[in-house]
Length: 242
Image (tube, rainbow, N blue to C red):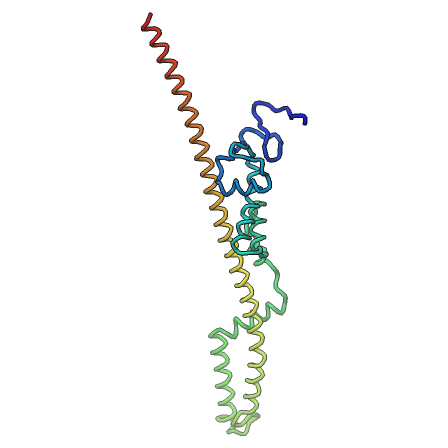
């Protein structure tokens, strides 16, 4: 197999055997053991000294998160799949909420909302109480109970029954739609919390990798400084012997 020629600023990934910039280099011993074992399932030839790129690890982290979720909760639901997709694509779940809130309402839904809003207000209670009072006084006091609806107000009872029969299902339509919106919002809250937890875990892993990488650089600097000190000591000793 012909080896690919690379520059001093590039390295060959042991995972995809492609060249990447040195700034993308990640050594396997700097990642967590569980994550490395997950990578070795499909790549058994990898070891603690293997090298990857950051972009490759990002894609593997998405697969690792999916595997962990399946292990914890079984088969992924549509909500977990949306969370995984948003992590891999870098999208925001809040955009889903905005798109749902901007969904246009039908004429019937708007009418149901208006009826539910007006039927549950003090304006409706006061105005309807005033209507009942006028109706009763008109038929009893002014028309001496000989008007169009004498006592016991059979026509008024019929009107009230019709209003209640029509108003109740319309209000229920509005309440059912509101409950559906509440359920969707609770699903979005769950997905946002799940994504936050997964991203915090990923952030901890990246911080661990960064700390290990910095410690390795510090050790290399210390080794160079020790070698410099040895050279200086040897030079001083040689000068003293002279």
